[in-house]
Image (tube, rainbow, N blue to C red; front, side, top):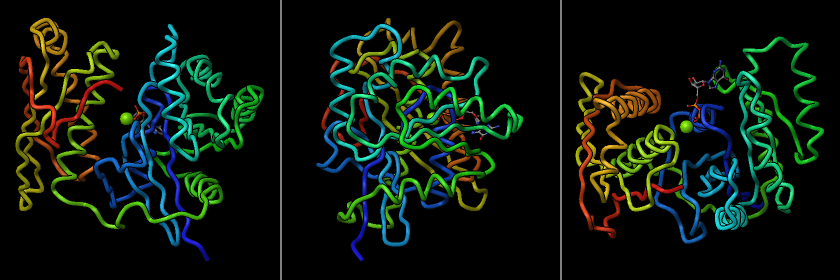
Length: 295
Ligand code: GDP
Ligand code: MG
């Protein structure tokens, strides 16, 4: 039988549980690599290796911003990103009003793609069974999804069904990534990505593309199961530094805390995270450790 592979875009509003789902999916085998040529616009979040198949989960820049104020350029960049993937996985949670209104613009965009679109309704552990069916129906009426999978990323219910739904939509293709790529280099990459994401959420995407996160030092204290990380957020203007720091340094504190919590879950270790913000006009763009901020 042919080896099956595919790129899956994982998208959805903040807090819907994308990271949790990804971690659950990847288990301990978090494999983060630098993007391959196949994904010029998208960044690889992780690679799942199954029996005879491989799924590369990617983040699609631009798509997160399609909510409200739809700029033409953003829509076209989101569309271009989506063209590079094989399957789209939209993850929604059960926010107060549900995430349905939040994703409506994205749904409009997804309707136009020829790719299969799966919807994961996450956090079903928080909802009564009788309330689930109407919720599924309300998403179904949008006429966008090839499959709707209710699940709980936190507890694992439904995740196997999602795995199967994804697997059966893969096509014959190469193993894009070696099955085991967990190295210290990828650790730095992963940490930078997490910090980047938290900055993005905390600043509501206000920061420009010219910002970057550099992980300068990782000290892995295996005896104490402690990961000590020092990272620098580079910005180009003092005003941007102010945005990241927030009032009395409150925002950087939040960013650091949220990043630390994610990292502790990811590495199953205690994480000690030191974050600095530096203003530097022309930080080196070619360093591999630099990750551009803009989605
Ligand atoms: P992201 O912003 O989409 O990456 O969301 P996260 O994965 O960071 O999750 C946001 C919050 O929702 C975290 O506090 C998670 O623990 C929580 N969460 C994620 N999945 C579930 C779930 O299935 N059930 C419940 N009760 N909480 C969840
Ligand atoms: Mg996340």
